Length: 362
Image (cartoon, rainbow, N blue to C red; front, top):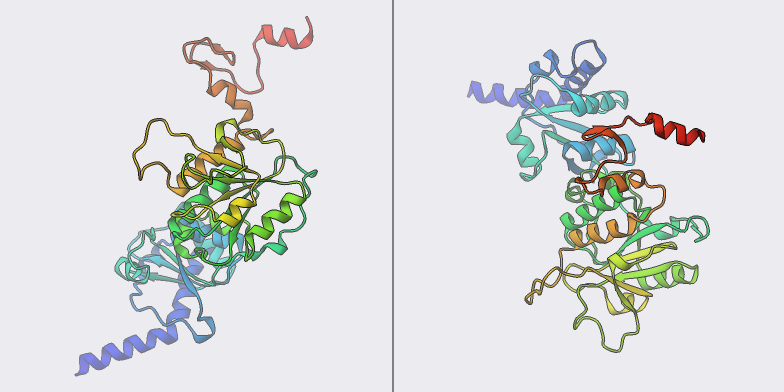
């Protein structure tokens, strides 16, 4: 009976002192010792106090990159940072998490691995979670006017009714990596921007501009009138394309990106709806490398998105990889045009004597 009473008193006292202990822990980042050093080892906090009623309506973001990028972007309200106990110290990105949380006066708590596993429903959290406000797409009316003449190589990705959170996250990750300017989703029958999406995107969701519309066909038609090319996507030409359709179909490898483009991807199962397909001026497809049996004639939407986006974005002028492309595609059996000799890469900014003489006109 006495032991039970002591246990109850200990648990109730955490509700009063948890914030004090959390601040005591997070202030370790501001002192000279390595963040999460001796102070980290002293605290063993298995009992997580309930989130105050004023902070309800939050969700649990998990994973190192999503949490760090969410803190950097500062788009969400952050209630608490939860770190896994049992580490002798925090280094690299975990130490930065602690420093940013301290700078923003965010409480930092430590939990055992089993507790974090349960909170995340056994998702891969990498020892880092945050209680945050939800992130929602903005109305497409907030996109702002982007005239085709401003930049002929603008690319917006439009997603119609994507429903799998991991597919959506993977698409967002590829879009961010390859340089897509904006992402538009359908407001109805689409996966929301959940923590699972953020983790699948490696945190790209936290920093990308994602908008939504409830009238996708109307949005596409409006952009078409403004001079944008609306390019839909389909699997290999087959029964899903009406024989009477006059929309041209071309391989993504033959597509020439010479004006602002909206690339439209459809639902995982049914593809583009008829109304959206009718709003397209062109349909892009990925040709297979062999004869395919029924059921394997299409790709996963996230894989298809990566291939389509790369085939388009590789045409972008002035991209970071443009200057390297010729060298990377060179036959390794041929003498290198960018080296002093076989296997010796020339340092950027330096040139051989003969090249320098040619540049000087001598």
